[in-house]
Length: 114
Length: 116
Image 1 (cartoon, rainbow over the protein chains, first blue to last red):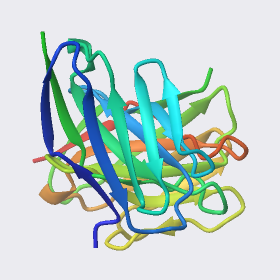
Image 2 (cartoon, chains in turn red, yellow):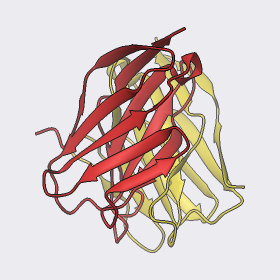
Image 3 (cartoon, rainbow over the protein chains, first blue to last red):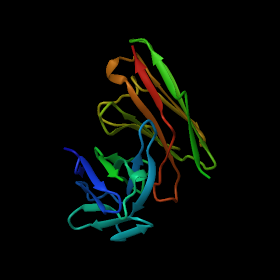
Image 4 (cartoon, rainbow over the protein chains, first blue to last red):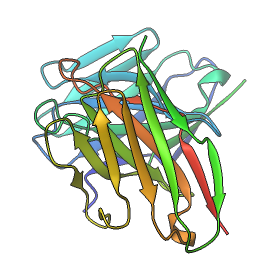
């Protein structure tokens, strides 16, 4: 059973639009949710992260909305730029004894057209 | 700042041979090191998690006999892919983190393994 699911698999938006990437998880004991982005031929880089004590985390044009009851979260990218085109991975992890163990979704490929 | 280096960046090995890859944390103490594999067209699979003062925990489908890991200090870890075959090809990532920073994981650039 896949622990972390992402949708859509791919998403295309025009420059300036808001892109919405979705993520859901199974294990209610996850307590750390980072989003990574990965550009072609590069390793993933941390974009933004949230813990369940909050239902929203904002960093510039990137915002995570978190719904603990439904075990869902989403990443909103406002005023999308062509440079935002990348694969976005939602991950889930722990802050206790299993710190450092992340479970990744399969990613959403985002394309922003100028 | 926190940086993670991996070596080599790319490697090619013949089927049935083994290769070792290294991971070094700079600027912080890596109390946990996780090794992942990203196979072509796939997401990141956790191979094992190594935490200081604890036994290395391997995920299902990965074993110590196939992917032995060493984590001798708070700045270095290595993993060997023994008896590599085609299905072992992919990008191997080292993710290092430390206590007290909410599990934020810093990834190295990866070692891309090609098996001929």
